[in-house]
Amino acid sequence: MTTSPALLAAAAALALLAAPARAAIEDGYDPTTAPVPSTWYAPANPAALRADRDYVAGMRPHHAGALSMSRDYLADPAARSPVLKALAAGIIRNQSFEIGLLDEVARNLALPPRVLDLGIARIALQPAATEGMGQMQRFLRSPIPGPLGAAAGPVSRRDVQYAKAMIVHHEAALEMAHGYHADPAARNGFLGLMNTDIITDQSQEIALMRRVIAAYPGDAAAVPVDPGMVHGMEGMRHAAQGAPHAGAGHEAAPPAPRAEPAAAPKAHRHAAPRPRAQAAPQGHAGHAHHAME
Image 1 (cartoon, helix red, strand yellow):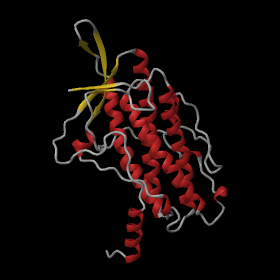
Image 2 (cartoon, rainbow, N blue to C red):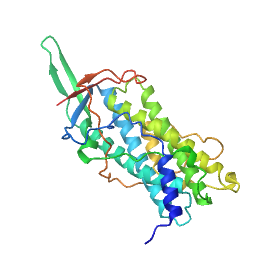
Image 3 (cartoon, one colour):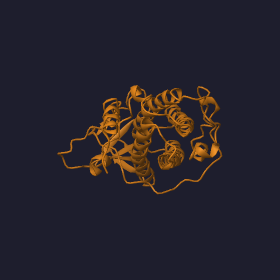
Image 4 (cartoon, helix red, strand yellow):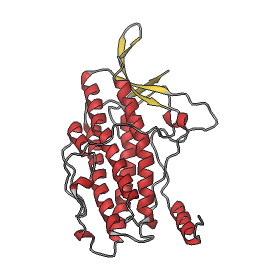
C-alpha cells in the first residue's frame, strides 16, 4: 500500500507538535544498562495499606475503561480526527503501562511487611511498588499530541463524542489522584509520583480534547454522549471520590457502571534510577518512600 505525501506530511506535523513527555516516574532510563528492578517501601500501618488498596481498586478498572473506550473509537470508521486518533493510541499505550504498575503495587501490598532492625528500634516497612519495570521491557512512552495540531484534519460527530466522553473519564481520574494526595493516610511515594504523571498528562489531554471539540464545524453542544460510552467508572466507589463533575458544558453525565476486562497489558513505562531512601517529592507531603534491594 502506498502512503500519500499528504498523509506523511500530516503525520510529521503531529510528531513535531507533540508535547514533550514529563514523567515523574519510570522515565529517562539508560537503555545501555542492565535493568535492575527495586522495591519501594512505605510505613506499615493499616490506614496506609487501606488507602493504597482503595486507590488501586479505583484507578485500575478506571484505566481499563480508558483502554476500551479508545479501542472502540479507533475501530469506528466514523472517527476522523488525526489528533484524536493519535491521542487514543497514546492512551492505550501509556495507560496499559500504568495498569501494569498498579498491578505491581497490588502484588507488593499483598506481601507481609519487612522489619528493619536498627538495634535501638525496629521499623516495619510495607512493600509498596516495583520500580524499573519500564527499563525491563524497554518501554517508550507515547507523547501527547501538541495543542497546535488540534484543528488539523476533519473533526466528525464521532470525534466529538469520544472527546466529550474521555473528558468526563479524565476528570474522574483527576479527582481520584487529588483525593489520594489529600488523604493523610496515603503514604505511598510511588503512587504519589504516579499521580503527578496522571494529573499532568490528563490535564493536558483534557485541554487538547476541548480544542478538538471547538474545531468541530457543527454544534458540539448538540452532540449527545450516551453514559455507556464512559467506561470503568465503577472504580470511583472504591476511591471514595464521588461522581466526576462535568466541565465546560461539553461532557456527559456520570454513567452507570460497566464491567471491564481484568487482564492487564504487559507494557510499562521507562524507569529512572532513584536513591535508596529519599523524602517525598514536593507537593506530596507525607508520601515518604524507601527502596531496598
